[in-house]
Length: 234
Length: 123
Image 1 (spheres, rainbow over the protein chains, first blue to last red):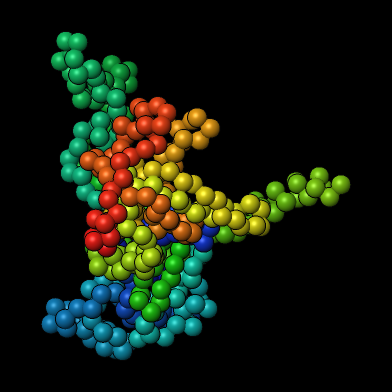
Image 2 (image 1 turned 180 degrees about the horizontal axis):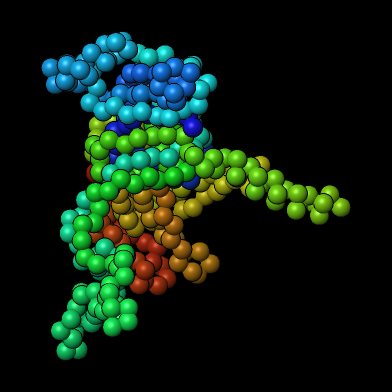
């Protein structure tokens, strides 16, 4: 488990890769992430973690207890504060008050991005679950309804998790295994291949990919090379 | 669009792109990578469409190759395009010259020429 960042989604764009192919990217603003507390397994917290704050806030808009906590760890008031569970080594190498940023994720590294998806409101089953619905014409008087939701006396109930209309979107989602295309530490920007949950201007959390796709890709390439190797040598 | 994204896109945009419109005849120098070698391939024809804005700008070039109409869409700011040469300026009254697709023979590759004096005066 590694240290992550809090960022703001600025929007999407694209960049041209070295080979001329076009890569869609999401631009994330990660400027001014600050370490607000370091917890250690050997200390009184009994576990190791790093607390990170993002986006400056007026001191008058922050509660007195929080202000006290922040000044204790030589930080400045932030709008968003989040804790990242880290290994003991990472935690002990981090100082509270330190400003961290895009340099944490160099280009070609893999990340997971956590955000809140765009809210779609109360939606029917056609939009929410992709049900086919019923005919629009030919005398059909049933168009976008869910249809049957169960059987009869047996089992005599509607199964749990039956897909029905309801709130769609505005839920926390994690997009895993996204590649960092560019990491601009000076400007505090991360360009990440592909899309991330949420609308432009939303806050997102960026952490190192837990599935470690780099290792998996290396493994599969090694396996391929082994399979091909003898045939090529001849 | 966010000003920072606009800036990122402007960084990548080419600054030496010639001014050309649908109807103009162009030569597009494309970089082709074969193995480890890179060479330049030419694609010459009439521009029949320009689409997109900013970094996403693209244009379509149509030519008749061995009796068969061929169209290629290029990203204007792609690093794969080495150079764009404008051969002739055309005078057309449409933004999309899709009507050229229905033409056969000499008509398919000719567009009325814009008077040079006008082109120069504009430039």
